[in-house]
Length: 405
Image (cartoon, rainbow, N blue to C red; front, side, top):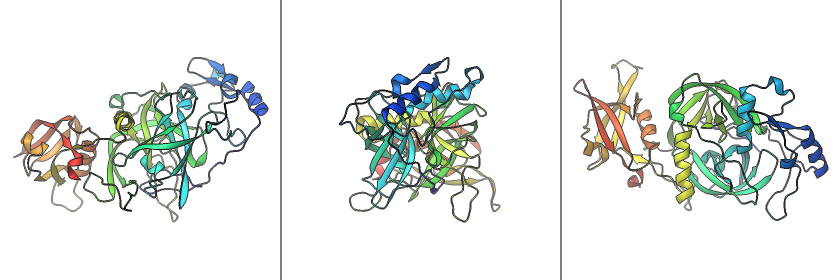
């Protein structure tokens, strides 16, 4: 069993295995444990002490191998991290995935009370290795439930899975990621290295960062890869939040939350300094998919089983500041246009250099690709470009990326 988190590749680490515990022990543990709700400490014997009816896929409890989530020993010394983690922890799960050739673990968050869960595509496809995995979900309070895939979106590395259970779950609260500030305090929750219910604290280090990762699209019935709509083969561009909150293998799909415990991002990748084994851990550079993007993708997948993506209808390349080798890129130059496509209809021409998209600076072709593909098909966008040394702005009604199939 291995733990997965995207680092432009994956890392492997030890995983914790469930151990069955008698009900009497669970009751004793519950009697000694309190959880902070943000304003007060509450006993949770009623949450973990009761039994659950048979036949609902609940297979194990794991109170030997892990501490209870958000342990509070001194209520007079709690801080905002404790409060934020206490609010969000009941919504965070650990995900175990098994395929024909191996397995791994990641994290996820509940979207609804009836068991829809948001995670990463690379978690449920084992980095694109399987389209038919066996998936189990472990909740914050130890219930282990079978899950199935509802839909995946390799373009934004998001997926929705579902558990069937008579239990009522706690959905994560979404915050507006467009209102984030650099320097804002955040908490990452998940199961790094298989260590469930782990909390780490940091800040938002940068916004609108673009990274490129390998596609996690699962193989289709013919053994090929599902079509990606970014024109970059087996790579995909993601526009993300950068954070220094420690994120490690196994955090993928877990929550990045603000001081109120509200979701601002879905943890997706880490940067590493490199090592002989390629398995370095956190170096303080982690990435999360913004909550606004995650919410749109999740809503569409729950409704239709898939997500839509916008299409600009332009082939672009990096525009360099000068001809010097290694010169800084300063925008995305339009190299070709699709006849009747969104860009052409809006009046964009070959040779224009796009420097802004929906209020965000564009410095490269990858940044423009990532920004466009985060939008829904048919969305309106404001595009800023330079033509003949003059800055111009146009409104574009974006096309549908499925037109590229």
